[in-house]
Length: 292
Image (cartoon, rainbow, N blue to C red):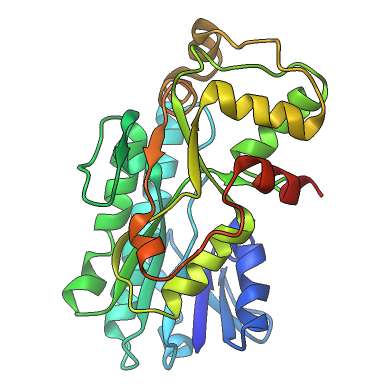
């Protein structure tokens, strides 16, 4: 296939682009501003412009671009996070709907859609409460122009990614390597996860299949106390320094309440039922692969 990718310089994008090429696909990457190299396509979210002519003939667009949600949610940060996802997705969706090649649109989303929830959630579970859920729902809704045009659309609701190159888990590695890790809050909240390799493989699988709609991408889920024990095993350090709930709220505000003191117990049955298998089915395996 001929596949265009936004967010190609991000954590998932830098792994997905070479994986696509290794699988025999031709890849175009969308770059902010003017394209300067072969295989690049220019776009500008703020100005609402994109080089649609260069995208004609693509079979699929993988939309990964969006500002990181892993920061304290000040009023300015909330606006940047939401606008980067809604405006970018809307621009990509409208462009996809205008192309004669009628490409599939496969976009990033997140398990934050379900809000903090201790019950097992599936794609049929309703939108949860909180800012992360609001962002994920608006992110997916912004793709309406592509759906209304009859294009195949899929939103991969990914769990936090296990990778040393970036993401939430990478930020946790330093204190754990120093022996300063421990449970967060009560330690009873469920944390879902997926390895970077499996997240990339899930994108390839959805691109090469007929899956559409929301697709959960989580290899497993553990109570936080068990999650941090696995991090301790992987880093060969004790996990005896808990991070109290009050400290989390003080340091991270609502972001900490929702994403550290809360979490989701996510089922990926829809993805697995379509023939996908996770290579790293246990957190120990995922951490060993990430840290090797």
